[in-house]
Amino acid sequence: MSFGIHCSLVVNSVWENIEFSLDKQIDFKIVMSNCIIDSGIAAAMAGFSAPTSLGFGQVKSPVMYRVDYRDGAWQQGRALPYQNIEIDPAAKVLHYAQEVFEGLKAYKIDNPRANFFRPLDNHDRLNFSARRMCMPEIPADLFMEGISVVTALSEPLIPTQAGQSLYLRPFMIGLTGALGMGPSSEYAFIVIASPSEAYHAGEMKVLIEREGCRAAVGGTGAAKTGGNYAAATESAQRTQAMGYHQSLWLDPRNMKDIEELSGMNVFALIDGELHTPRLTPSFLKGITRDSVIQLARHKGYEVVERTMPIEELLADIKSGSCVEAFACGTAAIVSPISDIAEADGTAYELSQSDVVAAELRRGLLDIQERRTEDPFGWTSEVEDQFYQLALAG
Ligand code: COI
Image (cartoon, rainbow, N blue to C red):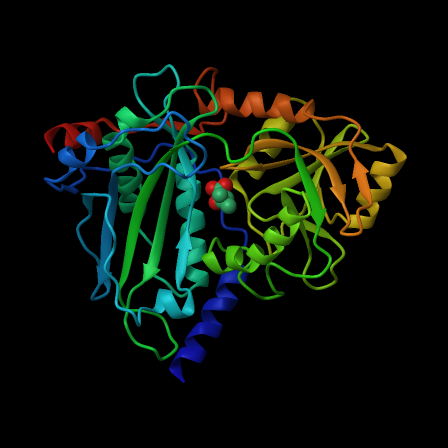
């Protein structure tokens, strides 16, 4: 009974807080990390050999970070060899999907030290997702400790070709083993990592999803939680079986307005302006989306965030007003879209491919990979203390 009351209060406050802030300046420093480095890490690193082809998310760094929450407090963080996690079969995450995650990258292209891109924005969004899923917030110093220690320890494995990176996957799970509905009292926050290439190379063909919804009105669409991705999987399979790469999701209330692709946001070049769907509570506030908006404006483009009816976009493609479209996300970077199609095979081909997208991808990667000045203050090096910890371990 008390759960119902508690949860509805949380939900209200979450939606009032949909505009969680992006664009934290990177002046955050951890005073002094006391992360424990497990003695098995050296052996785990020594036993690692990287395959010639990385792909995305296939190769796992042999180290991970874990910090547990119990008795109302976060405990001490530990860097560990990558390993299975022991979990009560009744754990809330397994039955009620009490889970949130993030995706961000560490880059090491022609630089002696790895760097992050807007990590505190991922931290903010993780906590936004955690509030939505009735989970405790993770303090910024533990979040930064987790991604920093995994990056410092994984340093020899970070690929160094432009477009490659160490993809970091911080996540939090509810561990309490009890089958009644309600939030856990125990959690683990874990960071794993994967030396990776971009999620998708080349042009993407997109299929409009007219039947299913990835997220409901009043649901969890704006949170980065596994259930949203589970809900998109059946559509993704159908889409791929028909020869397309991504489903294009429409708003769950009217099935009219464009929201996002399953793991990426979407932009269209219409009459020389960049248009992207205005944020709603049913899709993810992409950090790459925000970066593309800021970077494009910086380069002189007019960027319009608005409600984008799918029928209007299709008419704009047909009439030639819309010549180019692209997707963007942490994993995807900026990927051109070649055509947008209906399930009956009607395809709306974009007449221009990878022109503005390529300009923005280059501009973004130049900042992320530190080839150019970063006028936004988005990048930051991994703090020296984590390299010292890694060496001492
Ligand atoms: C990311 O871009 O980091 C994501 O979480 C998308 C995921 C589907 C790979």
